[in-house]
Image (tube, rainbow, N blue to C red; front, side, top):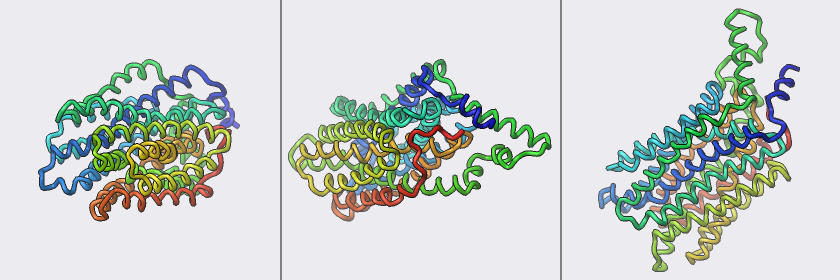
Length: 444
């Protein structure tokens, strides 16, 4: 009864200024995550042609894959740590720390002098990139009422695509600035640090988390005082990850959702990150300006992604979370094959890339929409970050595998077509992963 009363008191029943501030804060953090991620994808080939010895350039795709892989390892590590910390010290504090961290190391990446230093800085940047999503998603989910949470979460996830578009537009203008152009892209990545002043004074932790923190404090107090405690109190006083893994329902849910996350994330990092590179190859064959077509491909792809995010939220609130996920997984399978197998004209490639982005990037919206609705507040940050980030350890092998396949199979097309079939896993697992949560309140 007390739990129900706490939930009714803590969960927002209507939109408020705090709801909108939570959305803006998490949106800004995720926007610059997107910018920084795509800045690397856009400039990696240019930068490595300067940092690698000439005799290593034939293996350029493998070296690019290595940069993406180490970024993912850093992302996964930072994301898991931040998710756990967000459950203990607050969503807002961890969000601020993550933004400061990745802004600092993004800026330092501009001063890389070798492939080794580039790799180290990418890992450190990845720690901050991964740390932002969990607390940002939690603070949004806990600040919005259930009837509109899906649309708000999809708007949040679209921030990543806005960041990808921003990087593409900036590269259109920065690329002609000479050999140091790639360094300027990373210096621009320092800008999100300025958002911390506003977040510090304008955003607060959600009441749901504050109530969960108080329940955890009281449970530990009773335990330390030698009082009789319930199994729920004993679990609440323990480590969040242990609490998740020791509950059969939560453990099964976590593992199945992790499979879905792997399907989405492995395919994107191993396939979609090569869209600009492949566009440049097609443009070169057609006698076009390679760097311009690389930037345009990123722009079109990510404009399609923004529409995909927004549509996901609308459909998820109207149809339900799981039917919308099935649609996006099916669309991703089809569009990967069309983009990399059926298109050779650069102009047509841009249009199909936009539709591809709608499904392959837009499907990421299932995570901020669906995940917060499946786990209790006391472990929400830990659980959603485990799903979102553990998969990145496995996904780190994706760019390396793709780079190897590109070199050994003679091109991007064959490699993308093979790895893109991993979207089929999402189609198969979605019906069994977790219950439908459309319109339901967050678990207290």
